[in-house]
Length: 343
Image 1: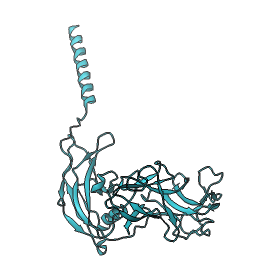
Image 2 (image 1 turned 180 degrees about the vertical axis):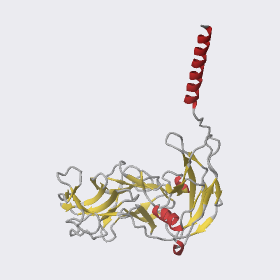
Image 3 (image 1 turned 120 degrees about the vertical axis):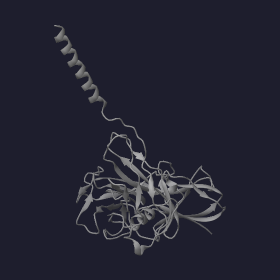
Image 4 (image 1 turned 90 degrees about the vertical axis):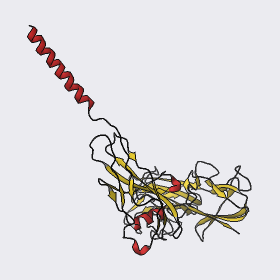
């Protein structure tokens, strides 16, 4: 009897130990983040269009230490230093410890963020190390360098907006909206006359066109014309993946402590058909300005990073000298921008 009891006890002990070992598994003990070993921090680069396919630099880094053996995926991210990685751009992902982006890739990212060619800009890179969705991403310290890009025109994906306001011409490149992230989501601002009807076409022909049967916000191939009753600048949004669309009539103004009425009311911008832009000439004080639509803060544009490109809800734009200015708002490109000219 005693022998049976001892055998039973040993079996229970073995089962308990086995279960304990099975539950414990590997222990997450992050020992080290990846760190850049090349290129050198604060290096300066002057980019040339003739070298578009050449290597910008080989980025190499040390391995991340998760406390256990794991297949690590490394992603090289890039951003303007002023953005502090608010919206980083992925340059590539590898299961290795180095990656070499091209000059053309680096240049296109800088230009797409609204920085002009020929002017130096501070940019930074970081490494994001991942093993699986249940384990936190490990980031390296950022690597800052200075880059002077060359001027280049980025060919963003476009969606044509032909209609009665422009002669039903799908080849008109002045009436298009853009997918700034090339993700099938298009946005843009288009001036339309009153009682306009329009459609969307994929490419400069009628081969693939979308309308809205039932005016329910859903796009249909070859569907009914979409209507815009009042004249003005329409904010158009199209998700070609889900075939949903929205339109909003907007009127734009300038507001801020630098304007005559301060933050209390807008100074109305006037649409200039010749340049397809919004303009105003007025006296400004030292202070801040922003752009907003429909006398409301629900749709406003500011400048994160002071790089002359505009972002929704972005930072105030500083006016550093008192004087008379012409202020221009450019909503006819994939990246919205502005210009202040003292006269």
